[in-house]
Length: 338
Ligand code: P6P
Image (cartoon, rainbow, N blue to C red):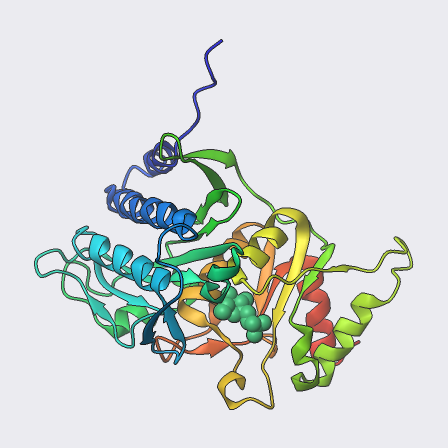
């Protein structure tokens, strides 16, 4: 018996484009180009243990972090491919201080913000890592873009998603019509629809937070974590702690199985006074996915992540993201109501 015909991600993107008669196909083509870059990165990540690509490149990035060779490879793979795709006018990457121009004559109507390989500190210990991307409309499409085109609110995103390089490589993306997951079949190099219309459970069973920072948090955050550990009157079971230390992996588990992730500000460390995670290419794209999957994402000042007006390409934000019931509960603690 023939294997069922899997829906490829290209097919899925084109089908959703056909629902919009006014669509020109440029966003579809942009996503398909980005996915080619992701497949290239996936192949390299999965071989990392074999090639000599493991280890440090000896360089430092804008964040002052040691750049791993795979980081550099992922950044260059996306940058080179997207600079000539013809659908974006400017890019920004976690690995680069300034906005990245596209090749002259290739200016398109969108912008791209990306974290080429988030969680890279986990590469050498074979923990899942990921690429995160965020797409907006450029302010003056078709002309060379600038930082202003990139500094747009998360609520203005036209598409966002991530690729997680784990036990299998998965692409999860949304164009504002739900969240859809695709699993890579490396034997044919295709992403097939495996998780249509993903919805976060209303209530979590996992909480993800680095408790090593416990003494650096404000009291409401500490009180909330203590509350999670109390026995639940109804279920008798406290939440289970799960923290991988790789944002895409922690987020993906919480998206599929139900969970809440917190990275609050750290009042003792100036580098993390406004949180550790970056708004444009980490918090905002994941917040877009979370809200499209019926979840929520706020800061520890109860501001919706998608409502934040960015002022810097690499600004950091405190991030609380996950099932709606649990984010609402954190908000109660932060507002002093619990
Ligand atoms: P910590 C990885 O370096 C990262 O940027 C995210 O992927 C992850 O969620 C976070 O930092 C982990 O930070 O301070 O708990 O090691």
